[in-house]
Image (cartoon, rainbow, N blue to C red; front, side, top):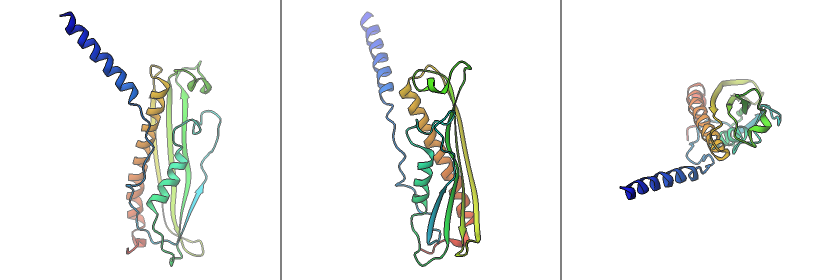
Length: 195
């Protein structure tokens, strides 16, 4: 009987250790993102999102910055340009930020990354995608917004917190991608490439 109890305790300890060590943060891979086949000749990415290093903005702390991910998304989804086309495909990134708010009033943002503190993470992506003719007149446009919020308790390690933030980032980007692909295919259908 005592061997059985020791065996069960051993399995519980091993499973607990294994789960905390499997928190490998994986970067978002854009290789599976297919081109949206829009006929354009020039691609412009205009970064207008807030770039602050002050609270509550924590973009400089997260494993992958949303602004960088949206730029990579644009390059992946609009990779095939037509050099003969005079159309400009312009993507203006209006929001691409990660924010953190302490859940307890006596905590500060500085403490959130040095110890275990409870916080609410908010992430925003907002982009304006438009096609312009050679004179700069707008031919078609769509606006895409995605938002996520999550509370992280003080009972998780800093590694677990980073992992949760990265998973949240992935989820937000995939939501943004789904919304953007649907809108682009609908709104820009008259400008679809024949290739």
